[in-house]
Structure formats: structure tokens, C-alpha cells
Image (cartoon, rainbow, N blue to C red; front, side, top):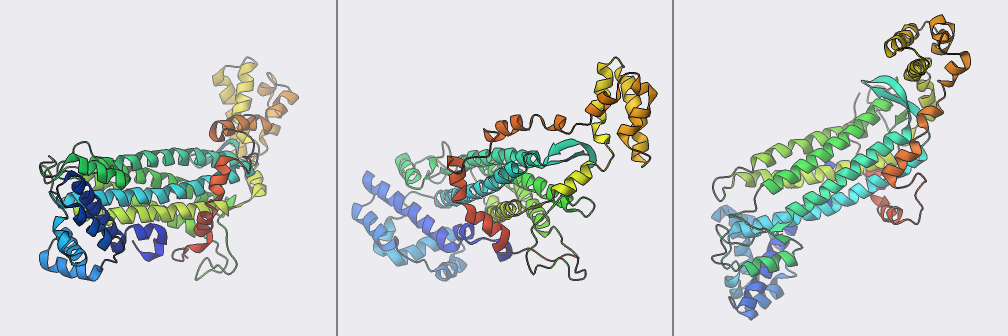
Length: 469
């Protein structure tokens, strides 16, 4: 992944030194298990650990060996032999390359998930705080991009919170599904390595055993994992697009924080562009794109081929790194989002009361008008307002057919904004468990406070992406 979109903690998981460390631990734990079975000398397993536990692996040396042998696992084992000495002959007993490679990949994906879950907590914390801040800030709801009925900006954020809560739960499930260990030999039969070795390695590496492997861990697991990341990316884009729309000059109900000295355009000094949410949108497209090759990897020849390998060397680091960056950036964006309630109120009133059309129609039906007649009467008065030819309430008051059913007071009552907001508490309780702002001492708040540094990184410490005219 490009350094521009890479945060250090998750990048470290995919660095060669980390990968070789994980490969060593898998091999060393397997040696310990084999020593317990009497397959190799106990002293050999102890020496392997003693020589390798603090070793710094020579990445250039491993690459040099691979250029000769054309096999990455053999290159690593050859270098490990140089570190360990004669006892290295007891490494990799009865194992095949995929035993260590697939198990290593599972460890890396699991660790990447740990970071992504922290990202989720930072994002959810920001969404929760801002949702309660604007719980009763009225704004206009839109369908098809057109004004519909009032809601609150807090409800918009609560909807995003609920969506990302579901996304987090999916990631927890995907992490569990991907975190399996296979130490089962050339075609998964355990003919040359005892199943207890796999069980021991899995326990030591924080994984579960793969119930049945061929020569590899089945790739349907990986397909589901990357598909989950893709769905998360879609949710990220959905919120990013909402922010982009709200920042449009014609709307201007919210905008990304614009720091001192920041410049929006190389040509037009007045510009304040939604570059963060646009950047997030692009990253979401990348992450979704990685799901398809992961699904293509499921159908391998017989017990295994290596057509999946090149794909996973790219999508493993790139998808997790890009998603980490996008989640952190989105958390910072939400945390520092500028919200303009006065503009929201102005836009809410922009259509001269038309947002209450359903209420008037229902009131007419309650007074005896058929639904068809009520719709016709309301629409008849609404269309002139669209053309800028009057105020909706005034036109209704003047319509004798409407007044046949409704008095002036009854018409006026249908323009009460509070009607639309009366169940906000109910929705907040469903989403957050309470309609009141969470206590600063609550478990949920405490956990998220501990990760506020992620929010700050997302808002300030990451690059803004290319400028745009």
C-alpha cells in the first residue's frame, strides 16, 4: 500500500520482519509439540527457541536465497538454519509450506482485525457523541435528493452508528472465521505430523484448528473475510457521501473541519472542498475491489494450487491497511465535523411548509375526505408553492374545498415541527440503550475515550490527499 494511506501500526503487521517472526514462532511451537511426542529431541526444540527467539532475520539474505532456490519457504528455512545451527534439521518435520504460510496469514489477518476493531470503537465513539449533541437539531430529510419530511441531524448520525455497530459485529465474526491453523501435512491427512501438533500450535498462536484442510486452509474463509471488509467499505462510503452532499454550496448544512492555513484549491482561494470524504470514497472503492479476487481464490485445483498466493500477497496488506486508514480518517472527520443548525433550519423552511403535506392529507382523511380526494386537494395547493407562487399554509387556508374539512386552527396544527420529532427518544433508546447522553463513567464511554488518539490521528495526523480545483 502507498505510504500516503498507511498507518504505522497496521503496516508493521505486514512487514517482512514481522512475517518471518511469525513463521519462526509457528515452526518453533511445532518443534516443541513434536518434542513432547518424542519425534525430535527435546534439546533440539530448546535450542531452536534459544537461537531464534531474539533473532533479527536478514530479509536481504532470505531474498538472496529465494532468487536461487525459487521457493520462499525454503529460503526462510535455509536462513533459519544459518541462525539455529545443526538442530535446525529438526524443523519443519512432516510439514508442508502451506502449514506455515497459511497459519501465518491467519495470524496477520487476525492481528489486523484487532486494529480495525479499535478503529471501529473510535468511529462509534465519535458518532455517539455527535449524535447526542445534535439529537434535537432539526433538519430536512431527503428522498431521491428531494425534501421529504423533517428529522434531526442526531438521527442521521444515530443511523450511521447503528450501521457501523452491525459492521463491527460482522468483523468480529469474520475474524473468528479466518483465525484458523492448519498443520496437517502435504494433503491434510496428518500422515507425517500428529494432529496434536496442530492443536498445540493453534493454541499458542491464538487460533483455532482447521477442521479439515487439504494442503491449505479452505479459501471460502478468506472470501467471506474480504467480502466483510467490502461491506464495511460500502458503509464508510455511504456516510462519506452524505457528508459530501451536505457540504455542497447549495446545501451547506455541514462541512469538514478546515484548519488554519489549509488551502482548498490551487486556482480558487475561496474553495473549501470535502477532500477527506472524497478520499474516503476512493479508498472504499479499492477495498470493495479486493473482495472479487478473494472469491475467485475459492476454486483451486484439487487439494491446492498457488493461483491464490499472488492475490493474497496484495489484498491481505492492501485491503486491511486501506480500511484502517479510511476508518481512522472517518472517525476524525465525524469528530471535528462542522454542523450548521441555522442553515438546516433555513433549508427546512425553504419549500414554504410543503414538508407537512402528508400531515395535511391525513388530517383531511380523518375528517371524511377520501384518500384520493385528500391527495388531490393537497397536491393542488402544493404545486404553486414549488413554482414560488405562495406559502403552503396560506394557500390551504384560502382553499374552500380544504376548509370544508379543516378549520384554520386545524390546518395550523399540522405545521407543528414537534410532531415529527416526538419519537426521537424511542429511536435513541433502541440504538444506544438510552435516550440520555451516556455517562462519562460508563463502560462504553471509557473504552472509547481510551482510543481518542485514533480519532485525532484521523482528523489531523493523516494526509489530506491531492488538492482539487
